[in-house]
Image (cartoon, rainbow, N blue to C red; front, side):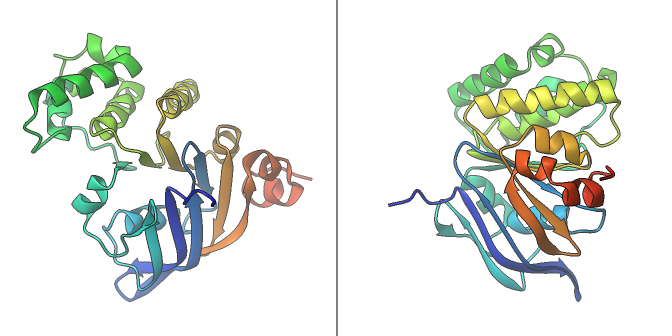
Length: 241
């Protein structure tokens, strides 16, 4: 019997108010995969993540995590199912320390030993954060702030993490380090669903990909195959035939 997908989004319709953005989108992530969503601005990529997380209510379709139907669940219940989230806008408070941000990520957790082990785990992945644990977030570089966002999402040991445009607004050199961080996260056994504006880099650092356009699936397959596909390169990567 085939293993159930960690995440399965099937025939998903969703949007904002009466404006439907997604028209029957399908996405799957299996355990151990990094999967990316690419496509032009307005294609519905971030809307997929927000609907999975329960911030938007679907009007049709199904969302399942580990085979459990979670369609329409509240965000805090989705988190309890082992899903982490890094929003497009880095939710960092300038006058809070790195340590205080990590404490915030475990809000409501009463087990002190669990909190300590979670902190040690993210410090092992991101040693820069350990060195700046007592520093205010406003003293951090853009890349370090993104690492902090990753660390906060990992504090509850999710099986799956959803990343919305983690490199937006960052310099090219910093973007490379962010993709190195994604590799570190993946090697910790966390599956990744990535929305990314830098489509070529996203394809180069993922196993499979979905190309969305106008709220619908246009292409899907192995990332390496899509990266080499002349039509995909011309239409979505800005490369000429």
